[in-house]
Length: 465
Image (cartoon, rainbow, N blue to C red):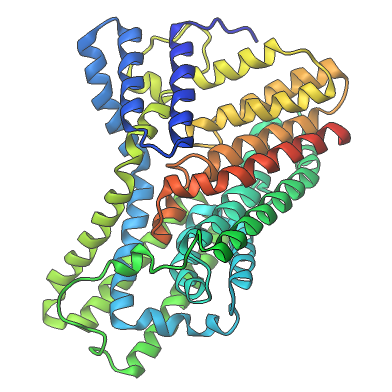
């Protein structure tokens, strides 16, 4: 695979490095992202006016791509608001308080539960299910909301999604590109997923405990708990019997959702939509019981509360998503057919160029596949570039004479851990929004454990090829 890089590729790479540098310095990336989109637009179209148009259209594209996530977060927050105000939420989570008594139990219990549900239904619906119920319990046990978001990220979008043993969407993509049976890729990925998962979650836990002990990280009331309407107190509007019935009914409804997902084989967006639709009906039911004659207006207010929260969280993310979406299919949809002939997208082209530029041996091959996977994950999808990882693994494995399955699995793991929801700000938004934490702060928290995990996993891959 030979790809001719041009100015678009180098500008995209330059601004990617600038954005990463700005993030590391804990500064806002909006200005850099907008300038990057603007310059890419000018270079591609050779028109100043078109460059300006591209900036606005890239925002529209990013919003459209993120809308499903915005909606599920907004609806869950709207539902959580009325459940919290009425005290139903408190009654609903009371059984869990007996199990989760300290930050350690909270971290590992939520993480393992998130991983199991994510294996069957993928992380997005799992975040909505677990976050809405377990977050208050964890905070009361002493685990900060940021810690809850971390454990959901690492176990769900990291371990479960990178292995994808049950649904097998990820290994199927990489296996097809590498010319291997899906089972071979899954078998090769098991030790790597295990190493990556253990190293990352243990290091994250150690850092979390250290920061809690030193006072650097404190348990505070999370933002979602503050999403309360400043009107009449409605906590006593329902009697204890009604609250108890609702506190049982709501988990039962979500459990039925899980059963429907399993029977109907709903995954990804469809599974998330089922959770979101159920949350809307719960919101309406509780509003009718609480507000009675005023329910028509109050339902709208709770939804507006959720939407305000959703767009407040997503606001800083839209510009950076707009830039990185141009690295994939977004370029053609936003700017047009201005890429070189044979291009697979700016991000994938850069990954191919890197693969063609390095010498081949097991060590270099493993390091390169990790790097290629990580680069393809920069678009925040996790899945869009893993086919490239499979193709590169096939080339490298053939040249080295072994290890195609291991290299394929390694590229898959790197691509999904980086882009699937642990290191890219807009990819972590489901967990960040449900927990009411800053997505940029969450990615910074995840950065060190994930990078160390990738290094260790790459070294292990070198020896088991």
